[in-house]
Length: 495
Ligand code: AHR
Image (cartoon, rainbow, N blue to C red; front, top):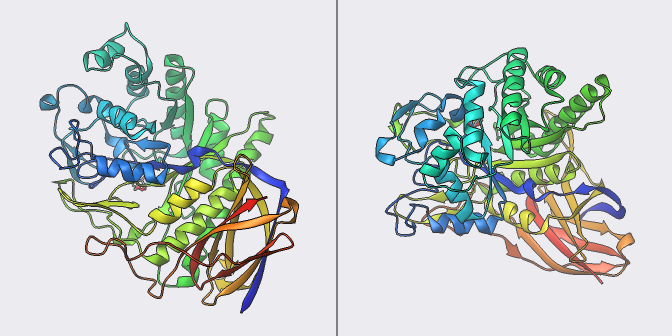
């Protein structure tokens, strides 16, 4: 059998994995809100119309924070349309997705839903058609206790207490020509700066997230990040980055996604630190990777002006889940700078959870790596060194194994996440000598003969992880068999 080695040491730490690494995203897009999290009349819906079956799957994923309301949608959204009596709310054209927006779900419903789902809200303000003061009014509506026009309006709408929303995105993907009222970097900087000033005057406890690059393919990348940071450095806390990956026909190129994501992150870090040096600043800007996923962008077909259309409903294959697992490794391995990450998205739209109107909610293939990493990937991420074969891709040579190792000091255990992108089985020797006496307690695998297998309503468990042979421990080395093209989680108890 092919052999490989992975080495990790207790003293070689990358950083703490923040729980917000396992955030997600709900946009007014397709059936994410309507028929996703919100479906009045559904047998599993509560009195607010929130689907409890969906909430229970979200809790199974361990999602702590959810970004809302967009996405591209937010750049044309007037938040005032979504508050007050439902019968008085206007129906609008959403330019971003060519959809009819009824506004039956808005800020107050989202806050209530967050409370029920036990997640923290992360809000984005409209930096497209919106003016800086509109953003200030929204922050006042959400966070100001009382005695002003918008805080009293919130109270009149049924929420006595302020929502105390901490994380605010200054727009969405303003570098993208597809964005409603897209801006050049210098123009975005000016608008975002004035918006940041107003938001902080309204509530200086908030954390602000500036729009960084939304794709490495854009001609403005990575200059966009440099320019906006040169202007906004003292006003923001995080730089938002977005990137999606898909199979363009060559499997190897697709398997290289974990490495491409790493390069994208490293460039963002380098840009932040270049500006830090230029400004002689002591402040470090952290990353909010608030849209990441596998997404078959080329398959997007928009319908004209329908409500809650079936768009961006990618059916994820086993192969997608294995690539997805590699992306999660890369996020963990950069946790010293990525303090927030949001899987885009959560329900129906490029999502791990898929629903039927009036029917079931199922787990897509990508649900599983997310669930296990979110459950066991919290702790100290350790640096790893690997020795394994490489494959060729149009992005250069790529190692066949992508791995991350997390040390949970409280539970006195380690979680090793490994993707095997080889067509062959590999015996991996995982050398953990600094941890002393060890015992393997679980080896979970996602693999299968049919890489294109998906979960659907007819067979929702076609692709599910299984527990396999634990392997062996010898001299603080775990010997594990990794099946061809597989995602693996190995949990090790420190004795
Ligand atoms: O997540 C889907 C879309 O992808 C979002 O609306 C946008 O921000 C990105 O381009």
